[in-house]
Image (cartoon, rainbow, N blue to C red):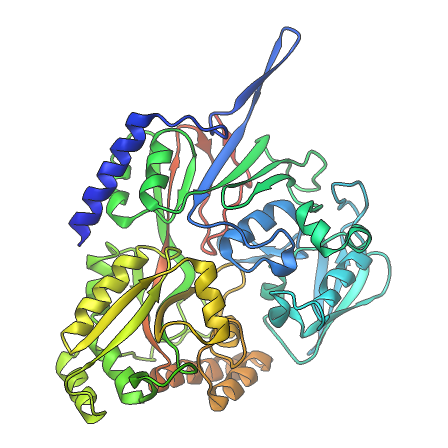
Length: 516
């Protein structure tokens, strides 16, 4: 399977190089002439597999979208490349009590229309997420908090219940200009957004590219590049070809089969490191009745899959096996929680106990958004066939799969992964395994009560104990086939792009980046 993929990629690379596809957004930059003076535009172009979901931060619910939003907007706090929380538009903050956090804004933050950011903008941004009539995509993640203004640059954030992970969650809330948004309305704002980040919005060609230019009035370190372009290139082979052709400078989610090849080429750097993303094969337990409704069948599937073989044989080692919903990157990770060992005979025995000694046929949905995703599902299908489970693979785009998950009509099994700027055990539990949440296909009140208690526990020792219980509960009740912590995997033109750093949260930023 891997040899076939590698051969196909090689043909695609050769075709891309021979065609020399000229691209109007070429990453080599452009020249403009004023009299006798020629000015070179310093441009960086990066590419990934899918388009953004929205330029309104309240509806931006993908990690690719998070990268664009982080370039256009400011947050109160942010994470550094290693995941440490640092101040951004906030000058300082402190926790006053279990549900109150006091913030002071910087007084030098301006939106690109020239208006100053104040506590009014923060209040509007956060409080609007509580508007039950608007149905913003991210309301469920943030509607438990509200802002109480104290002065022009001071305010409190008050949560409906204790939530010690608030600073990490705030890392994703991009502050929007209240006066402008209220004047033009949400739809017009999303079409022509104004932020206070290091870059300004220029254009968005849906399913093609987003163009931004540097914000010379940015309060932080002004970008050293003039233009930043994001390009949508769905196929991994095409992204690799575009990098080698000089059409893009940084590519994400490169095939692991090409990592060593690109490492051997002069002028290119490949970066692979653990990310905040956990990947699993989720079971649809709220749709039509299937064999998966029996916990013994779900346990059998976990026994039937050799995760070590997947990681080494399909992902070329660019992942770390996990037992449950946590990774070593998360607070509360418990290494003593053990998952399922590879045991084909145990899997067959459980299937026979459940009445499926001869196996059964089932459908599995997969999208291209995760590392080597189709190959992973094909390998899982091959392993499940050894115990009599015949898997029909359904290739879908991410938007379609998300809609099906929300309506409960997604395939009985689907490859899922959650990560990004504020991912932790709390987030995976709340949006992946809480009834009614946008990625949930399971209903279990006991787990939801446990997760809710853990999320609001202020005592570090007790919170850690509850997180351990959550991880063990997921092993026992198996609402999914737990797989691995995915590595980030990028390649970039290091002859041109200087000082670029890959982040554990998979957000692509241009902090400190320069070009030759």
